[in-house]
Image 1 (spheres, rainbow, N blue to C red):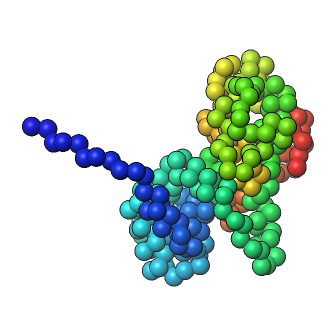
Image 2: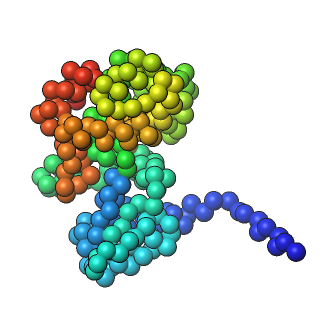
Image 3: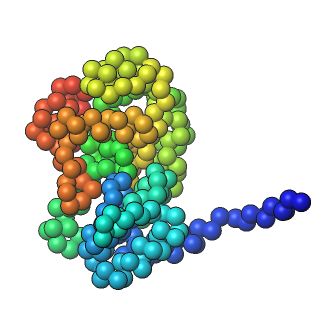
Length: 250
């Protein structure tokens, strides 16, 4: 005799909100928003709490399914549970107020994160938007149609509206251009947009976004900032992104 399925109620936003409402947990999630795996001790320092306090917060996030953890030797390493969690962080960041900057160090870090950063597994920030603009301008990507969700004069999202659900497709010319760069895609491939939380404009995400960022790192046009989720534009990147992809560097 099969058990009767339990009825499912409305979504419990308050449960997620309670997790994000604790500043230390929010700092942990932001530190991991670029898809890295970080040790508990590093996350404790990032959240500016004691190791024992960090352990409690990390356990809460793991139990809620927002983080996964693996043990290597004496250390535990934590990672976002998947791209959906990264999208959650970006969605909340788009409507959250900015924190006040009270030191030169905070200002420098905020500028670097806004200029270029990892958004889970793809390039974001002002540079990510500039690359996306260039790919559209160079007809590497074609828009899939008009959308009521964006002001197409500026590609900016009206307040309270959702991200453009239409996205882009790779053109035949685009597949050739990307292959010459070492990024492989087929004509007609769908490309998902992701609304950038600092710029309020779309950058590319999904498999193509991941492949492109990985290739830019492999070419040493971008490098990781070891202390934050920011990415740094190298001298080679300053030369080749405009030359090869027509990017207008911000």
